[in-house]
Image (cartoon, rainbow, N blue to C red; front, side, top):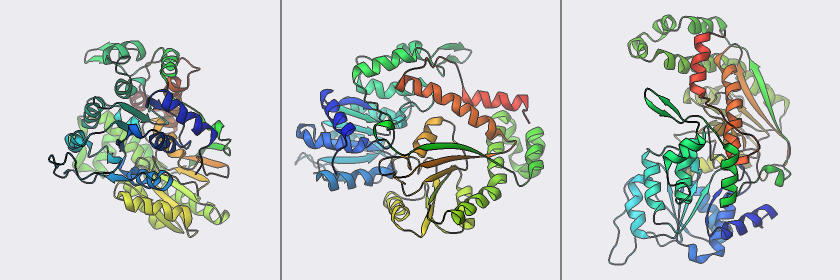
Length: 456
């Protein structure tokens, strides 16, 4: 596998930054390849620790061995092995150690004892919450790392404050103060509950600073990939009256259908209403959505489709009702089984549909055998959708792709899609520049306001 021109440039820029930068190339441009090539070219950067989502651990291991001959040891479970201090080594004698975010807090001390020169955070948007255990553990490891590379095509998933932890780890002298960053770039507002940093200001200035520090950001136009088209597909509900009743008399509808939950929901009625209405809309549009999928499979017998949903119940319905062999990738599928499912979808003609949970299947895997991706349900931030869409639109894709949002007619999803589009403009401003991105927008509050106004 030879590096493409943009990958050669990326490798040289990583080295120019002495292995300490944010690699924010769009999804599908080969960030993993650039990092591994840099490690291979700079042996003093080894050993290296790679922290990544659980579903891509074995992909890192596979590519490191296949393309660069770098052996990797993969951390499993929450109980690290006993460290052999007499030999100064743990059980890991490989140049690479790979650990997933979920178990990282349990492995911190063991990894520190083993020693490392380079720390790599793949899908670093998962470190957006500075108070989480995984972020605290990452920051602890970062203190001892000579080289630190953070990878993400969407380092800001929703609002600028989310990027501070990773910037602090890469460039602690520039982004040492959380408060200073929030005051300058997050449109701070004082509320009865303290400072609200959910907004954004000075995005052009932040973008210019990141570029000056060495952030690597290329768009997919460097690949000249086939076209990617987005379509909003209105879907009829199987029972519009039920949705109307739930929207206009939520507590009454809840009492009839989920009487045991009425007491607990009363305390958080507004927030509960959002969740229930979104799930109800998804449930009621399933029959027509499945009919559309089956129609496309019949009309285009040589094409494959990826369908993304949020809830497991939706995935189980798809498995039963789609008229072909499918594979499923969700939180119940382990790392090696997940890679097996991906390989089957990519290479077996009879497997024509991949049913994926938008979080579990939306990062770190390649599904370029498909030319169409359909969102059956939607997540709360635009970055998650961008990540998921680029599972099929990346290096290796030879044909134009279609990204479809199946939106229940007359449901809250209609408003959610518009809010996600507005939010994407802000999330892109700090990374791509070109727009100010100044706002105090809160997607969840906007949805609550929508319900209050009862747009139906």
